[in-house]
Length: 82
Image (cartoon, one colour):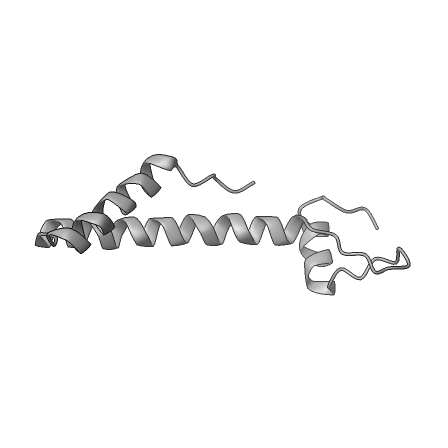
């Protein structure tokens, strides 16, 4: 399962964004902001991918229509036995 995005990370990104809009950032703060954003995006992608890979999709008639690629990933992870 993917890691949850820590609230400290989000709070610090928001603090730097507000400061950038009001008074500007130093070179160190700009570097920190970039690093935090990259970390956030990596965690977001990991969480999103995990959610999609765990999903099963059904049509109106109850027939499973989950994509073949996702079904294969689920089988590799032991989430399916069909």
